[in-house]
Length: 66
Image (tube, rainbow, N blue to C red; front, top):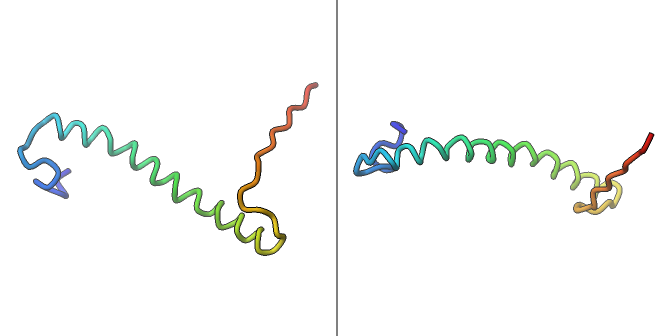
């Protein structure tokens, strides 16, 4: 919060500060998720280039009963 100074909270309103601090971890999680999934996208594009497999494929779930 101190990094951006008064740009985030120009009137020093504590409710805005607490809102910003509560949203930050959620945004951080989704940004990290996005960048971790980029490798999956690159891998599927490479498989498309080599094998001709489509980039967006259906995910099949197989249930094996014992």
